Amino acid sequence: MDLSFTEEQTLLRDSVAAYLGDAYGFDARRAAIASPAGWRPKVWSAFAEELGILGASFPEELGGLGGGPIETMVVMEEFGRALVVEPYLGTVVIGGGFLKRAGTDKAKALIEDLIAGKAVFAFAQAESQARYRLSNIATKAVKTGAGYEISGQKAVVIGAPWATHLIVTARTAGGQSEEKGVSVFLVDKTAKGVTCRDYPTVDGRRASEITFEKVVVGPEALIGPLDGAYPLIETVVDEAIAATCAEACGVLRKLHEGTLEYTRGRKQFGQPISAFQVLQHRMVDMFIQVEQSVSMSVMAHIALGGDAEARAKGVSAAKVQIGRACKFVGQNAIQLHGGMGMTDEMAIGHYFKRATMIEGEFGNTDHHLARYERLSLDQAA
Image (cartoon, rainbow, N blue to C red; front, top):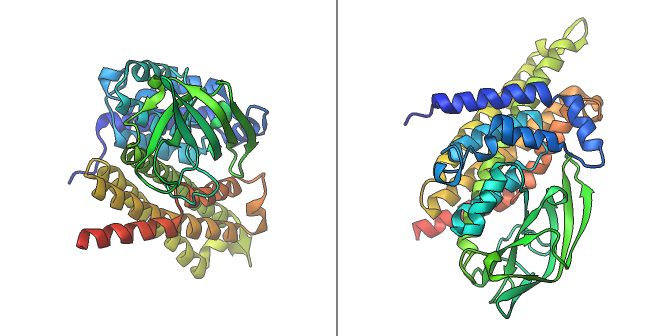
């Protein structure tokens, strides 16, 4: 199997890396996340207009560049290296993932706005009682006339303060934890009855706690089959997990590179601490974790093109490896920097915070290890 990048994918990586190298330095990022807005809309516009990366993974018939999961992987790894906070994952990977499968005229129009940088999406899925279970949904959507009335609460909706639209999972039938009876709706964030409490996250992003109080939407707001959207949700979330794994690879590379640079400059007993054999062994172990994570990320993105079972196993296997690597590489990077590694003035602390958050996103290591085991046992049976 040829795992090398095509010329177009290499050019995509180079153009994203070059732009971020010029416009997304550490100090500029710190200023952006400390600002009231928490992000830079001009950077988002540049992603759309200068780089065209918001459409990189969409088919040409929808106005995109004809790419797919590998293009997303390329972009997300570079975003991880720069600690990009703009909502590419929620908008392009998750929002786009739902919209391009909807097949409606409204969805196609929104994809055009997404690619142009005019529409921003956030995924309102998690609830306080769910603990990573996608089917555990208490938010309800009740049929009212031609449309639906949505009521409930969603927690830690990443990117919601910047969003124009929300992708909302709601129960339209069945019990609270049943896979059957789950539906997906597109909700305008300014709709009557939508209340958001915004706050910053530990890794520099923004999120919201969202309450839906009898929010009325029309029939066109339904994405996917009524009562039967769980397989669609699982598919899109697996794509988001794979993309997050790619971002983690960029974060892990920077953690390792930053630690190497620091240990070469930090002197103890008249020589760089990188000369001490025990620390060399530690950094080799970090390097191995990084390279294994990169390989697993590639495998996960390839698995996205397989059947549902192969996709789920590939994604969960990658998330297990990358979750472990985020913990090992991140903690060792901080230890080798000493206490100053956790200060706000040093980039390494910001990468560690992002790595820590990635370990728990869309299910932590234990969750995905259990999922992989369950899928393997089902396959064996």
